[in-house]
Amino acid sequence: MKSKPESKGQASNTLDYRYWAFISYNKNDARWARWLHRAIETYGIPAQLVSHPTPAGQPAPKRFRPLFRDRDELPAALDLGAKVEEALHAAHYLIVICSPHAARSKWVNKEIETFQSFGRLSCVLAIIVEGEPNVGGQRECFPPALRLHEPIAADARPEGDGKRRAKLKLLAGMLGVNFDALYQRDTKRRIRCFGITLLAFVLLSLGIADLAWQTNRQRMKAIQARREADALAQSRQAQALAVAADEVRKMYPQRSILLAVEAMRKTRAPRERPEPAAQQALRDCLAAIGGEVLVGHEGPVTCLSTSTNGNWLALGFASSKP
Image (cartoon, rainbow, N blue to C red; front, side):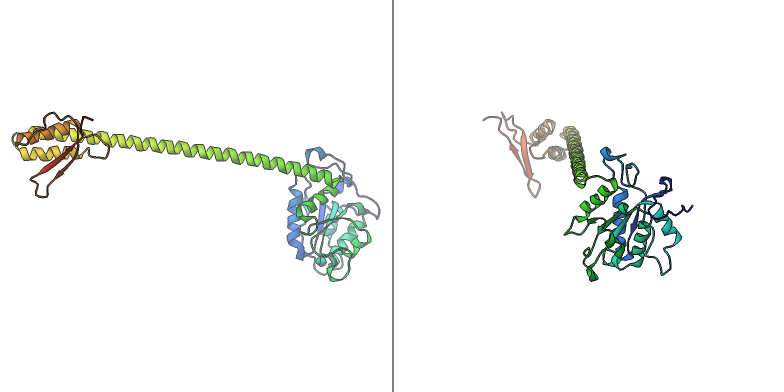
């Protein structure tokens, strides 16, 4: 429903306001308009300033939203159009994005004039994104209507305030507070948020490190368990081969030697003690075919080798004496 227009110098009823601000811009500055719209609507007002009386006559909210931006540069026409004029009438503030494009736009200028006609000159804010103010010519960034009543202006250019400070200057103007006070509060909040983020990152890193350590620990346990299982299986195979060698030693002495040698090979891994049953079976098999048994030697067999023709077998023993 369209609100009733005001006469010049007469403020509208507070209940008519639906927008905290109307963003006026030229379509060539649409990128800046999108940024500003998002930056203001998502900014959380410091708790100490919520309900603070604003120049618009309303207490400060937790966030300045909604803002009106949903329009492109208007086509050639004699008036602004009902929707835009109604939005101007229903906005607490007018924020003008100033650039040479805006300075040459008759529609941006018309929006400023229309808003000023409502008697809210103190609620007109400006943000410079390109060009220079009050220089005339192609570099002029203020539309003609702004040059008559120079408003609070933030400078988002890199050589000016920069985007963050410019945003805070606009917010300070909308809140009706000193810029430095808002800037200090915002800086402290950013430091606090950075500290919380850093702490969360540290805790996350510690959690990931602990998870990695636990995972590696479980992996090592699994490897050790697999090694022990393999060693047990090899020991049982060696014992079974040793038993088989003993069973055929008298009838098939050569076969018994092969079985005993295979039993020894099952436990020939480096630094692994051969199975005692396999060592004893090999000694018994060698003795059965006339091989010489080492008397008085109690050390384990540490290595063995067979000749290419299979007629000779060499064994290595670790000495049990120093």
